[in-house]
Image (tube, helix red, strand yellow):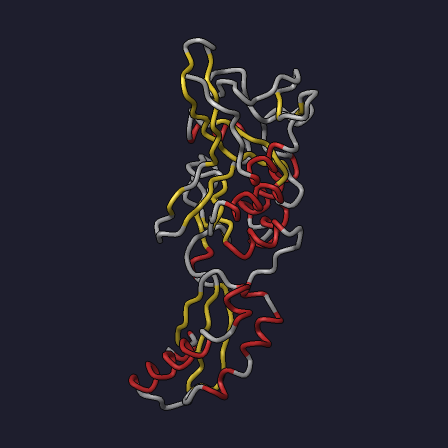
Length: 288
C-alpha cells in the first residue's frame, strides 16, 4: 500500500520554518535531506538544527533561572527572559510501515498534557537533555519562544509547562503570559498591572458593605525547586488575590455577602478575564 504526502498542521510547520531546508523548500536536516517520509523515531534525527546548537539551555535563560532560584528576580523577570530564546517543543513521530519502501511515512504531532486542574498544557523544554529525560521517544523541535508559544495557543493549550519533571525547576507559564510572549510583548502579571487595578477601583461602590479592594499575588504563583526551596513564580494555582476590605463591624454573614458581591462583579470585567489567569477573592488579610 502507498500513501499520499503528509501535510503538517500550520502551527507545526511554523515551528519547522526555522529549521534547515532541502532544495525544494521542505523541512530538512543539516545535510539538506527532507524530514518528510523519514523515520523520525531513530537516533540521528534530532530536529534541533539551529546553527551550532549544542542542545543545552540558552545562556541567557540559564542565567535567568539561576537568578530566579536565588531570589534575585521575580516571576515576570523570568518569564520575560524567555523572549527570543531558543527552547524545545517535543514532537512524537508516528508512521505507517512500508515493506516495499523500507521506511516510514511520518506524521508529526506536538505533545499536550492535562494539568491537575483539568486545563490543557503543552510541555516545553530548555534543553534536549530535559526533553529526552522526560520522554525518550519524543524528538525536539528548536524554535524561538515566540514561535513555540504560538504553537501552544494553536494547540488550544491554556498553560505552558517549562521543563516538567526537571531535577532543577519546573515552571508553569500561565495563559496571559503565553499570549504576551506569542505576540512579542512584555508580560506584566495581573498583580502588578496598574491598568487592571484602575479597572477594578470602582467595584467597591457597587458592592454593599465593601470599602476597598487590595490586589496582591495569589498563593498559587509559588512553586518549588527540586531541592524543595520556594520559588516566587511558576506555580499553577490562583495568580491574583483580591482582598476585600469590608465595613468595620460586619458580621460573618455580611462578610460572605460582601465577598459574593465582589465575585459577581468581577465576572463583568473583560480586562480581568484577559489579564488574569486565575483569581481568588478573599477577605483582606488584616481584617480576618
